[in-house]
Image: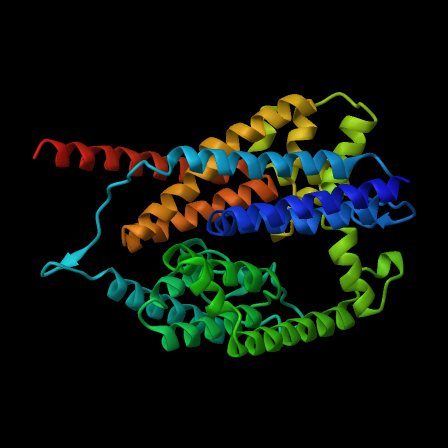
Length: 421
């Protein structure tokens, strides 16, 4: 009966999501990574709550605690308030600027040069550095510490996710070149040990400007054609083989006697994707353990959650922080650890309206205004916002909030300047 309840509620969430995409495809695609999170977390929660499923990273077995319902409510509130906020802002203009030369917008050229230079630097660094693909002493967590130029991690980020977004913009003018550079970007990430996330996030980032620029029918024609379907299939095969070979060598779940790579992949997807949310629900809602009320823990929520739930506790969390290893989906789990459910939902609504949706709205307006350089910064901060709202690292929100505030101040200035010219 408990399993049936979870399955029926999950199907209800699926139906609501399909309806939302039919209602406004562009809007919900832009927040697609939040929806993607939900569709990785919910099946995992159903799996954990079937019982007799060990959570290797917590060292205990799951059971039914109603976590699917509690997470589903967070998800439904996200969908609802993203729509309501955008509906409120749809008639608001955002005046910005773009770089020109002799009266012509040159931001496409600047982006092209920037992408080629940055990608070339990263490829040179990768060539001069040990690769996780060929050196057993290196993995994706230690690559940058052992890289020839580790400072590039601070300059461009772990996976340089702004590159596929910039390529999505460049695709509007340089189609073949953009696709070629995107393929090189994927190969680069494989080479430095990044397997799955850069493919999902990178593809999303590349498609985002296209969704904003094209109408829905044109976008679907671009996505669903023979070439893209074949390329997608080939990419899926490559990703599968890379992960299979890695798991065959490392046996990451040998501690729970899973040795077959296919079983390991299945367990990674369903057994671990949502275990932090299940743990927070089980402890602070189902067992009614007092909430921490420690607001400062939101800054590094993932670290706090790992101290609370990981086998090895604080010691394990500190070691993991040093090597860059994390669990996943510490948000909205961290809210249930710090606050009672009702307050957690109200805080979530505030974040969705004033931080997440506002960031997405500014990004869309900048792309529409052809302020591509500014949109590159807006995208990076938008991505950090999503990262904060999946991994629980609220300190990442600060930079985006500052940027959004400056953009809004600038827009008001340009609006007044126009009015009083």
